[in-house]
Image 1 (cartoon, rainbow, N blue to C red):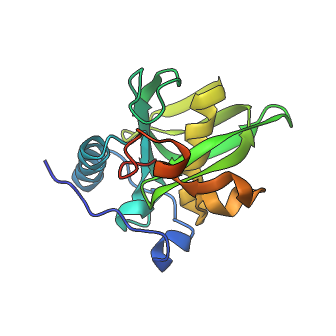
Image 2 (cartoon, rainbow, N blue to C red):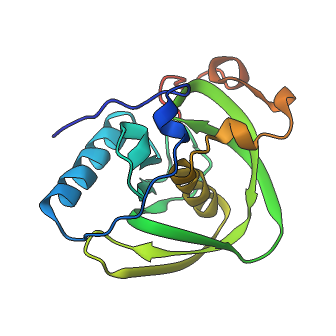
Length: 179
């Protein structure tokens, strides 16, 4: 079990565009994914992108059990490994909701996201993934994939009156474990 350091907002590595994975089913890739799940689990995360631990590759993982401690009203999202993702909005409709991030600890903000998307990519073995999702699942995927293009959720906030410290906005939630 290896828990990696999670980079914080301000680290320039979080602003870079990650290159695609070119080799699947390798020992290094499996180790990276294992470390990512260990890291995400250690901080009760809903998702994690490789750039958040300093690895410049298009690798994201996500998944939650219902209820999630930081998103108690959110439905379960299946545990997923997604490489080289492509997101296609299936309608222009957006939903705005609160988000946090392990790289932006202690803060939350209201972020608009497409409400209904299709995402494609590959798992760690190179097998294709093709899913159509909505709601919280769609939000989690878009949030994590933003990390692959150097975007953090505060860059998507439209109204900074809806951005602040978790402990102030949501007393009782553990602000040290945001994502």
